[in-house]
Length: 80
Image 1 (spheres, rainbow, N blue to C red):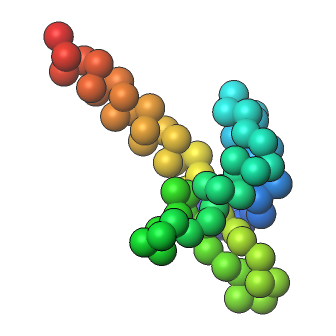
Image 2 (image 1 turned 90 degrees about the vertical axis):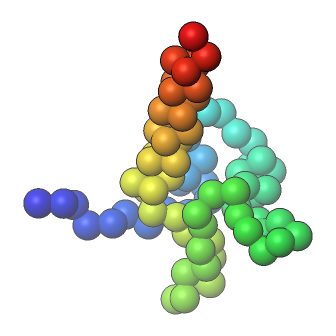
Image 3 (image 1 turned 135 degrees about the vertical axis):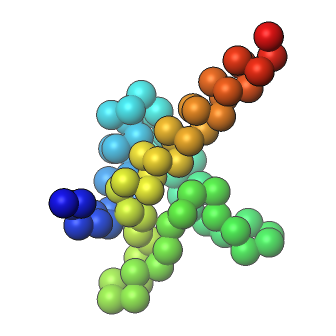
């Protein structure tokens, strides 16, 4: 059975990334969560309708980095 989603805030997301070896400052984390000029975010954060704060699903955050790692590995393998 799949575990229920676990929604975390900016600081908790920063801690999750630090556990994975991705050390970000508070400012870098905030920039990844803020919308760009086109209204897009670098990471899939959303505004919690109850608290009004930015949240992200923990599994989605980890999955983004795993996907990027897989793509980097594929690019390296395809280079040969």
